[in-house]
Length: 192
Image 1: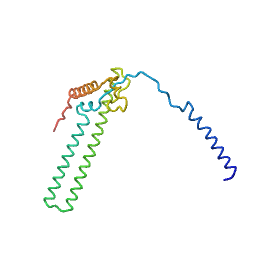
Image 2 (image 1 turned 90 degrees about the horizontal axis):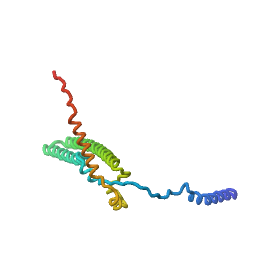
Image 3 (image 1 turned 30 degrees about the vertical axis):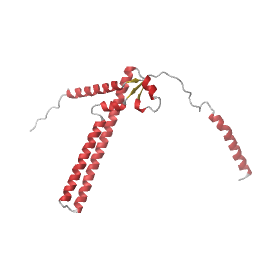
Image 4 (image 1 turned 180 degrees about the vertical axis):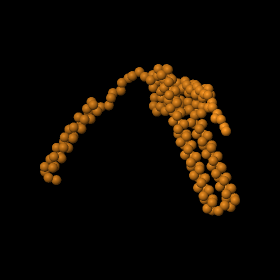
């Protein structure tokens, strides 16, 4: 390294050393100071809401698991029957592959159905919580079980809207059922 290059590197390093403290202490880069604001907080027990919601995604999950279990048992019976009937090794292998493909397809379809139902339930719960919050003039709604710190203060000073949200969901489900029941039945087409 030549003397000129060394001097340039030294000057660059000195400039950086001089600039770093001014950047760090710059008010533009400093964190915002905490300020006190008045916020009306409500909380819910999300687990209770999900358990109390008829036709929720948990119910669908259990039904899907039961159906898949029954499908696996039926597949195992068919495989066992093929073995007892002394089918060829190739036929048994093909049957295993076919049955596994069917199970995998059912499992994939149910996973997509459950995921879709969970998202729909999340949206319905969120909409109901937002409606209750607006009715009660609340600024923030949290899941009481999901609070990592300060939870007791929240429970002592916040407003529990769990039952209100459950009621709102039940009413909207009843309204949805009533509108479906009052819808006119499709006209039957004439048969030849």
